Amino acid sequence: MEIVKVAALGMTGMLLGLLLKETKPEYSVYLSLAAGILIFSYMAGKLEYLFDSVLKIQEYLPLDTKYLTTLLKMIGITYIGQFSAGICKDAGYQATAAQIELFCKLSVMVLSIPILMALLDTIQEFLV
Image 1 (cartoon, one colour):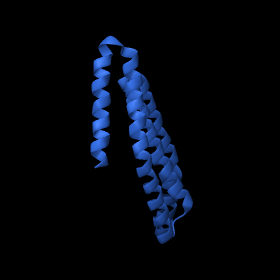
Image 2: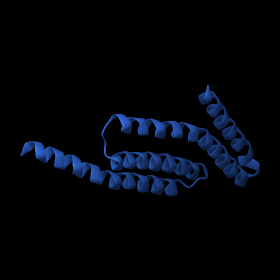
Image 3: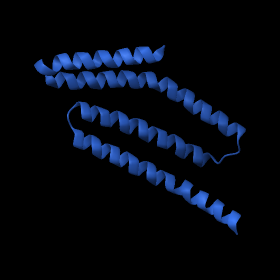
Image 4: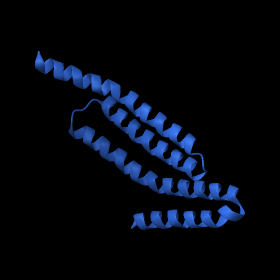
């Protein structure tokens, strides 16, 4: 039922933003930002559940904590990057949004390199 609340909040913010865009365009950006922050606050509870679940998985499986930490960092980068790029797109700054998205993709790639190297080392051990 929370998805209905979030969808209603987003649609309300969008409709109010469209109404204000013609009379006060500067306020429509603030309204979009406020709606985004409210939706992000709803998402915070889901993220807490996700982190708790990942920690439980870590208890069941003998995984190195740096891999789970890296996974959580990647998730955080994608959420924050998508959120901020969406705000920039709503404000009319598509080029800035594209740069944010590109930086997030590169950050995730940089974070994944040590995991890729560990995987390649493991494959090499099996082949030798």
